[in-house]
Amino acid sequence: MNHWLPTDCHAHSTHSDGALRVEEVVARGEALGVRPSVSDHISRDAPTSLDSVERVEAYLDDLDQYDVLRGGEFCWHDVLWRELPANVVRRFTHRLGSLHAIPLAGGQLCRAFVSALPEGVSPDAYVAAHVDALEQLAREMPVDILAHPTLIPPPLRTMDPHELWTEAREERMIQALRAAGVAFEVSARYPPHERIVRRAADAGVRLSLGSDGHSKAQVANVAAPLALARSLGVPDEALFDPVRHGSRTGAFDV
Ligand SMILES: [Zn+2]
Ligand SMILES: [Zn+2]
Image (tube, rainbow, N blue to C red; front, side, top):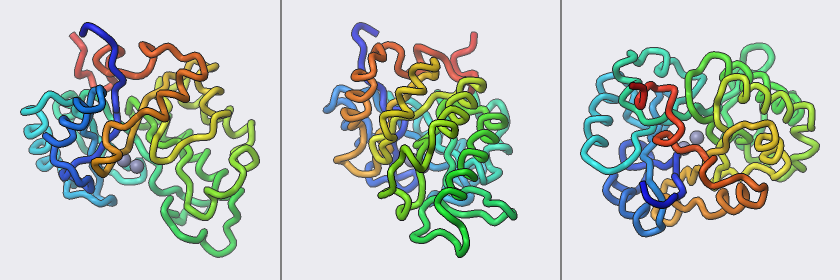
């Protein structure tokens, strides 16, 4: 490794709901001067066919043929990540955990992509449940990165994030990630507000760049997350790179 390149730790291919084949993801990385990853959805409750241990192994066999980081994006609320044996986990260069659905008080699961919150659930109650779920994910899910930490349903995205999240909630989120050693993704697709990213950086939580790209225009485009990290004074070399920093998968253990 001669000179530093930004790493896109989060991008999708045709193995799940991305538009690009793996070789096209690699080509986009080359074109943009970014080290590419393929981190497709691995879940029984996401738009993907990677829904069994056997299919995950076939996915990793395919990725082995390319010069690309081998990632995976796992739904915390789905059990598939709990079923992968250690020898399969070790084949990933890094793994991401996602809160694509949040258990609300009473046990009802609410997806992060709903066009309206369930009857009687306020934005404040939803975000409170999100923070509870995040703490649980950090405690039990051995991932390297929390993908899009501030992903919330579309109707909430127009609200003031400073009031929605509150400083106290941000503090809980960041301390949970810090205690677990999970990186905070600065997502190009679901951009976090600056205050929480600064809080993560100040607390020593590692930041990770993620395009969460599904299309040619998006994949490997981490310019905005990189600019934000740099504006907060985070050194390039501190941005999460599993080859440099290691992975909880054990891929780089000797
Ligand atoms: Zn996601
Ligand atoms: Zn994704």
